[in-house]
Image (cartoon, rainbow, N blue to C red; front, side, top):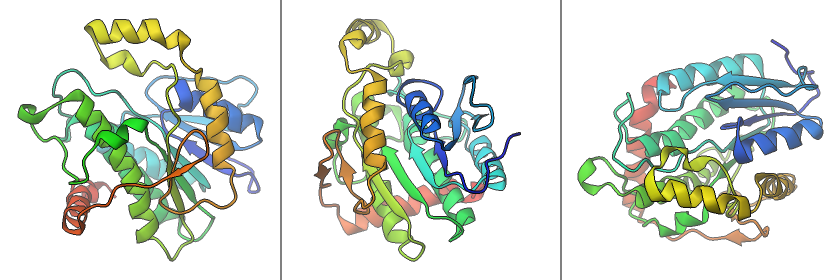
Length: 273
C-alpha cells in the first residue's frame, strides 16, 4: 500500500469509481492531492499509483463500511471528505442486512457513520473539511425529519429526496456538534448531469434516463464546478451551495423532531463507531 507523503493534502471521495465521484478523483489527482476513493467496483488510474488508492466497500453493510473507514484512518490523515456515493431509490421497498431502508442507509446513514469515525480519529491533528453532495430534490422533503420504515409508506421519489435532505441537514448538525475542533462542513447541489445512477431502476424510467443522459451536462463539467467551490477559503458552516456558487437556506425544523431524528440515527450506528 502506498502512503502519502506527510505534506500532501488527502481527500476521501465516496462513490469514486464512476460519475461525478470519478471525475472528482481525476481532478484532485491532477491538483497534486493524495486521493482515496471508496466504491463497489475495481478502478485503476494509470500514472497515479503513488497517489491513489481504492477501498472497495458496499455501504449497504455498515459493519464493513465502519471497518474500511477505520482502516483508512489507520493509514491516512484525511483533510477533505466528499460524501458523494449514492443511488436512486429502487422501485420497490428494499431493506439492507442492517434492517434499514436501502436508500436511507446507502445515501445518508453510512455517510454519517463515516464522518463520525473520521472526525473522532482525526481530532485536531489536521484541519478537516466535509462536504456532502446533495440534490435540488432535497427541497421536496418535509422538515418533520421522518423517513421510510416500511413498504406501506414507500415512495422512490420521496425516499430519495429525503436522503438528500438528510445529507444537507447532516452538515449543519456536524458543524454545530463539533464547534471546538475547527471543522468546516457544508453541502453542495451539483445540479443535473448525466450519470449511471439509474442502474437500480427498471422499465420506462431506466429507458428514458438512458435516452436523456447524453444530452445532460457531463459529470466532468459538474466536477469542475464542484472543485471550484471546494477550493473556496471561507465557507459558512452548514451552508447549502448550488452549482452557481450561491448559498441556499434550509427550511426551519421543529427542534423536538430534529433532536429525536439524530438520537435515532446515532442509535443505529452506535455499535459501529
